Image (cartoon, rainbow, N blue to C red; front, top):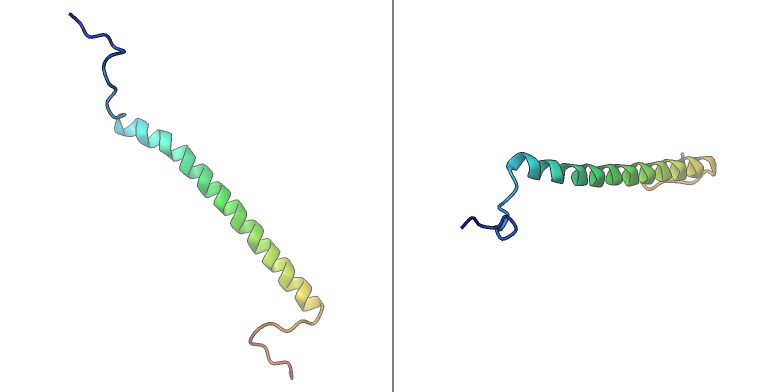
Length: 65
């Protein structure tokens, strides 16, 4: 009697297939993190630029100069 293929529990996926399935999810996470980081850096640069235009003093700068 041959076992029914549906009754056989699937084993772990071969190494190449498991990594291939994980890699797109990791790349998507990294892409989203990079996008968020770039947006944060642009906002910081804009704030720095507008602060310089308004004559604001940054931490550590001497006001008397």
